[in-house]
Image (tube, rainbow, N blue to C red):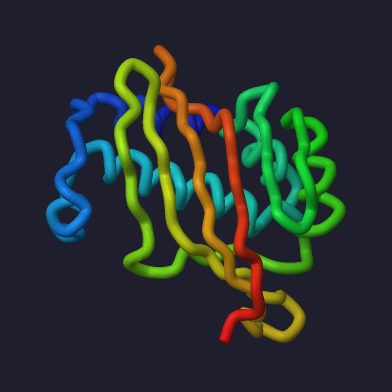
Length: 162
């Protein structure tokens, strides 16, 4: 959690600006908000991808609000961080990792609250190395005095990775 606080403190100093038009992906990548959310995505999923290592699941948990809502089209809905983490530990840790599909990340500001992150991710099995699943996602981030926290997650459109 200390590393998260330091990362968030450094990133949160950048002013939040409106995202440029979606037609200019290169320009969108250059906004401070995009850089903040992109770095947070990398950090939260690094902990997720290594959650079988002692302490990393707890690190992953630190990014989520206690009352986080997680909507998964094939897995259902969880209504709390505790329930979501139990599912992560049971189904993810030691089994597969998540990769962000390059060029798919979009970030949109939410005035007075935080940001919406959208993108596509794929899932790769540890035992075979095959990336056999792909889906879209949306994450709602709340900006707090001490940093950023995930309040809602949607992972949907799961299908085989072709």
